[in-house]
Image (tube, rainbow, N blue to C red):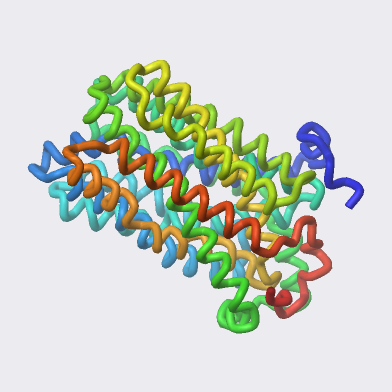
Amino acid sequence: MAEAGLGARAQWRALDSAQRNVVAASFLGWMLDAFDYFLLVFVVHDIAQEFGASVVDVTLAMLLTLAMRPLGALIFGILADRYGRRPILMIDIVLYSVIELASAFAPSLAMLLILRALFGVAMGGEWGVGASLTMESIPAKSRGLVSGLLQEGYAAGYLLAALVFFALYPLIGWRGMFVAGAAPALLVLFIRARVPESPVWQAGVRAGVHKAGRIWHAIAGNWRRFLYAIVLMTAFNFFSHGTQDLYPTFLREQRGLSSNAVGLIAVVYNVGALIGGIFFGTLSQRLGRRRTIVLAALLAIPMVPLWAFSATPVLIAVGAFLIQFMVQGAWGVVPAHLNELSPPTVRGTFPGFTYQLGNLLAAGNATIQAQIAAQHGGNYAIALAGTAIIVALVLAVLAGFGPEAREISFEDTAAEEGAPSG
C-alpha cells in the first residue's frame, strides 16, 4: 500500500471540503455525546448527597447508561443501514440532548436512573452511525488520522465537561450542568445544511442491498469476526472506563482535592487523550491497526504507578496525562479498525453494535471498582491500578492475534452481501 505511510498533514489534505464537514459533524456529535455522559462523573458525590445515597448507588447510573448503549446501537444502526446515515444521526443527537435536559429535573435517584438508561440508548446510537458516515465518506489513505480525530471526540467531550465543571459548577450546581448538556441539539442545524449522505450507502441503495434483517444475515455469515469484535471492545471499554469514570471521585475522596483542582487535572489528562488518539490513529496508517493498538496498550502499563499512586497534584496530572495519551491512543485506531472489519452492507450497525455490546459487558466497571475500593478502606488507587494493568495486557493479546483489513475498499464492496469471515 504505497500511501499507507502518509503523515497527518497529507492525510488531512486528501479530504475535500464536503468530507471535512462530515468529519467535523461526526467529531462534534461524538464529542457532545461524551460531554453529556461525562458531566455525570464529576457530580457523583453531589448527587449521592442530595438523594441520601451512597457513591456505589449513584454509579448505577453509569452502569445503566453503558448497559443500554447496545440497544441504541442496534436500533439506530439498523435504521441507518435502511434509511441513511445522515437523517438518523440528526434524530439521535436531538434525542440524547432532550434526555440530558430532562436529567436536570430528576426528582429522585430512581427517576435519574431511568433517564440515564434512556440516555444510554441514544448515546449508543451516535458512535456507530457517525463513524460509518465518516469512514464511508473519506479516502482510505485518510482513515488513520480521521479515526484518531473522530474517536477523540470522546476525549474532547470529557475535556469540555471538565471545563464546564471547573468554570460553572460552583455557580450552577449539578442540575445546571445537565441543563448545559442540552446544547448539542444545535449541531443538527449544521448537519442539515452542510453534511452530505454517505456515498457508499447511496451506492448500496442503487444496488438494492439495504433491506430489513440484513444484520442477522451478516452476523450469521461472519460470526467469528462478530464475536471477536465484541470481546475486543469489552477489553477496550474496561480500558477507558476503568481509567476514567471513577478518577474524579478518587481525586476528591482519596486525594482530598478541591473541585477546581479535579477540573484542572481532568483538562490536563484529556489534552493528553486528544493528542494520543490523533498520534496513534495517524501512526496506524503506517504501522497497521493491530500493532498500533498493542504498542499503545503496553506503553500504558509503566504509567500506572505515577497515575494512581502519586501524592501531589502536579505528579498526578503528569501521570494522568501520560496514561490517557496511551489509553486513548489505542482507542484512536478503533473507528477505522471496526469499520474495516465490518461486513459492508451493515456498516451502520456492525461497528456500533459490537462496540456497545463490549460496553454492556464492561458496564459494571465503575460499580466493581467502587466496591473494591470500599473493601480496601476507600482505596481507589488499588482498584484503578489493578484494572489498568490487567486490561492493558488482555487488550494487547487480543489485538495482536486478531484480524486486520487496513485500507480495504468500501466502494468496491458496497453491493456485496457480506464480508468473508475470519
